[in-house]
Amino acid sequence: MIQTICCIGAGYVGGPTMAVIADRCPQIQVTVVDLNQARIDAWNDPDLSQLPVYEPGLDAVVGRCRGRNLHFSTAVDAAIAAADMVFLSVNTPTKTKGIGAGQASDLRWIEASARQVAAAARGHTIVVEKSTLPVRTAAVIRTILEAAEGDTPSGRKSFDVLSNPEFLAEGTAIGDLEAPDRVLIGGEQPAAIEALAQIYGHWVPAERILRTNVWSSELSKLTANAFLAQRISSINSIAALCEATEADVREVARAIGADSRIGSKFLKAGPGFGGSCFQKDILNLVYLCRHYGLSEVAAYWESVVNLNAWQQHRISALLVQRLFGTVTSKRIAVLGFAFKADTNDTRETPAIRICGDLLEEGAQLAIYDPKVSAAQIAADLGTSEGWQMVDAPLAAAQGADAVLVLTEWQQFAQLDWRPLAAVMRQPAWLFDARAICDAVAARAAGLKVWRVGEG
Ligand code: NAD
Ligand code: UDX
Image 1 (cartoon, rainbow, N blue to C red):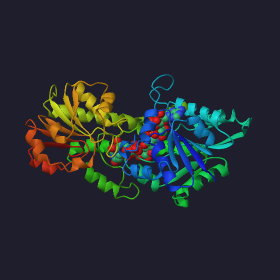
Image 2 (cartoon, rainbow, N blue to C red):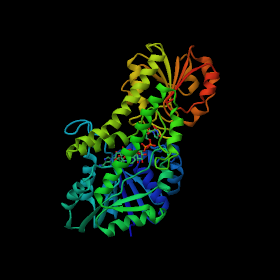
Image 3 (cartoon, rainbow, N blue to C red):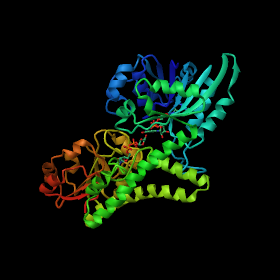
Image 4 (cartoon, rainbow, N blue to C red):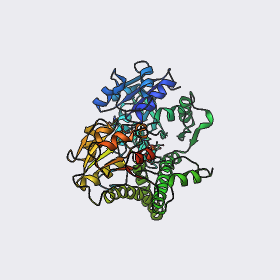
């Protein structure tokens, strides 16, 4: 029976995942550790609106458990030493230099944390891969841990390694964790697998806890993200064709989604997928396929990422074209910068590429997002020139030639277009890259309207 858990990495996955485990398993002590002192301080902030991750419902879960059986700390070694089970939930971004740069995952943080577990653990410890990793990473982790196994002054040290990828999506993380479609556990040692299954068994129905071998588990995570991202590139490719043919991508999506073999979810055309996972994980898959000599398979999946970038450039290009071929010195109101609604995360957000293109064309951007900070946008755009942050859609629209909606925040669906249109420079446009706004009302307010996927 697991009594003490340590999770290394207090990010978008480690924080919410451990909060839900602590909430559902009050008898287990859970400590989430991170090297980043500021992040840990934010997790410990008495004001729950200051948690470092914005997720609807997260504040309530943390509020219930923190200080009871959920702890956030930078004392990494002590938490590992006390734990029966250690989750590795560190970042695994795409490598930016060296072998595999631009495709392979950078495993330096996973290796560093595995080494730290090897050194600091006591007794028997189950090490769980929670990060998304290339297939066969568990073999690397096991090799590092095995080197530390054996008799030590504090007793015999041994390890098991499991793969337990996380399928939560940001913005819906708490619901996804509390009622997952499935939990996946890959492993070899039945006792270790059952120890982890027992934890999830406190709230996840038994038939939703899947057990596989380690490599299938690691690969299933990459494959799930590749399939999901592929659907988005597929529908975005059809959106472009709809715009050229007077078809409407929402009607097409409804028609094909009614086929139970296709299903209706994940068929929303938009500015392309963002987020920290899809691109990174597909490129990782592409890299693995090349490594195993499967160049056609690699090219197939790579095209999903290429189409995504194309969609983003297509949107910035069509905006320039509709604004008489130039946006130099024109003010454009950008509504939404986060990669999706209900998150403050901007990693790989389509806004970066689209705003980058518009800045390159000399536009003046007025950006509004309810959860993203100006400092984050400056870091993402790599400049503080050519754009400003404003605190409301109306302020963004002031004097603008166009409003460009990039994130599907619910408040944009409810915008009253008359006051916005009244302060814009005519002729004025609404470019709705999420097809979330009330296009009829915007047209009635005098705006010209482009919606993604509408012919
Ligand atoms: P993140 O960057 O938000 O958090 C990772 C944290 O790990 C950081 O705070 C970092 O300081 C910490 N860290 C790194 N090395 C450390 C070390 N040696 N010791 C202590 N702390 C260390 O990343 P994330 O979004 O939480 O993603 C984590 C993993 O989960 C990635 O592999 C990602 O692919 C995967 N994943 C993410 C999501 C998502 O929606 N974000 C969903 C499923 C899976
Ligand atoms: C994704 C996976 O869904 C999740 O299972 C995995 O654990 C992590 O990666 P996330 O990136 O947080 O989650 O959000 P998701 O809802 O998948 O959206 C990813 C991107 O696709 C967003 O930019 C979103 O706007 C876009 N998207 C999603 C669409 O453009 N259309 C859709 O129909 C769905």
